Image (cartoon, rainbow, N blue to C red; front, side):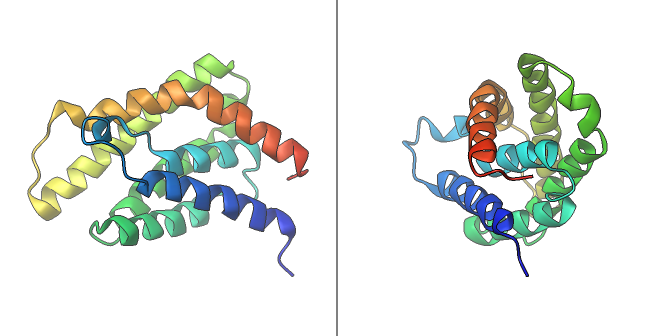
Length: 159
């Protein structure tokens, strides 16, 4: 039987996917944080025995399908970032929220560089500095995402 906390976690990932697909003005589009990856990173830090590479793979596959990216690109990059997060969750949990934000910014930078590298070989895309703006905005959004999802997790007793 599937426990209710899986539905609650899946609902938060679904909301992050909706936020990732929501239209923004052209001038704000390069600054869009990677909502799905940020939410997955929170859950992999909070409940690593529940949210791990499998969740990252499925969420990445849904993201690939939703944005029309080559199949498996986001899945692979999400999985690599979540693997690093889950394998070091005990260390990361001990950091302050601002230290976590800096570390999350580094993980997001890794994600975007891996994404660029894969797209460069698959689609012949060239690097532009605006590729890394979402890493900065995601780093700045991390404290609020962390606090919001922690309140959500505590209110619904997700363990």
